[in-house]
Length: 90
Image 1 (tube, rainbow, N blue to C red):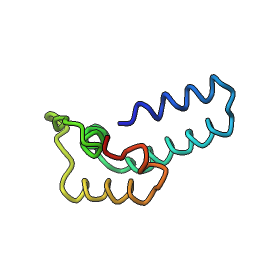
Image 2: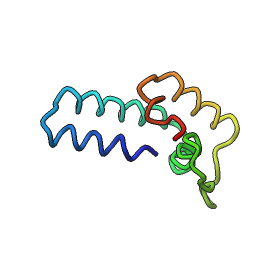
Image 3: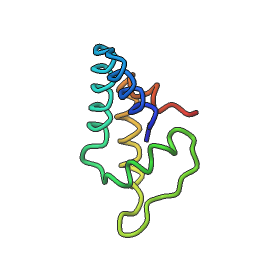
Image 4: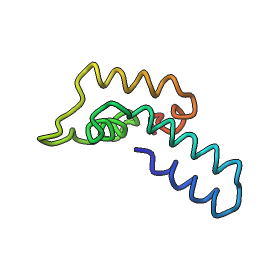
């Protein structure tokens, strides 16, 4: 997904940067909401591909997201500016 987001949250917490940690926490909540209602494994497998990382699709029985589900995930991420920066291609 975006491991550096979780690392940033951990570091902000450890360095007692409460406001930054709270902001990052809310970004993670936005990510959870973007994934809600979609097949979790397939959706989390799609996120690295959004970032330009070569990953495979989910294996049976999970399968991949449908085209409609993939479009919905892209729409949800695109609607949340804080997520866009963490999930932008690297």
